[in-house]
Length: 135
Ligand SMILES: O=C(CO)COP(=O)(O)O
Image (cartoon, rainbow, N blue to C red; front, side, top):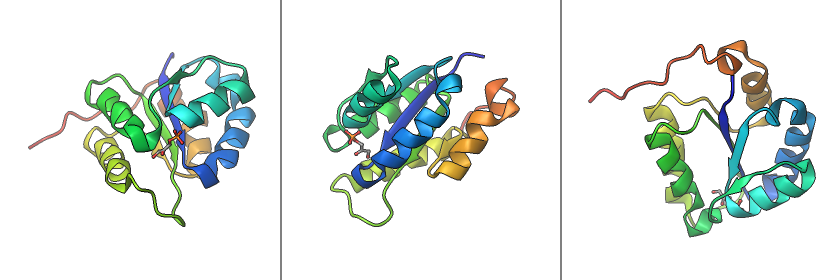
């Protein structure tokens, strides 16, 4: 089943995300890929696949991806955020991860979880339910 997958990594984590994406290229190429600006440029070059690029994270890219979630236009987020270095846009990072919880969006912040999502029949066949938030 065709999905839209967002791929994002902070600077120190970009090599890890590129390695992961290359490893899973045969699955990723079946889907629409979106990314924050710098991550998207690197992925496009490494994978030789089209990647829709939003703004760089510090300039609002995380929020643009958050908007996709709120609009029901994203199926998963692979977000290798950096736990060891502070980001100037940390509130945006938190806001993006918060929306994944609000909408029950499959989100991976490391390679082990990303492996599980991209190989999961639940994900690939769309067998999980995106939550409608309750107030
Ligand atoms: O900062 C980011 C996510 O919070 C990623 O942005 P870039 O892909 O532009 O580096």
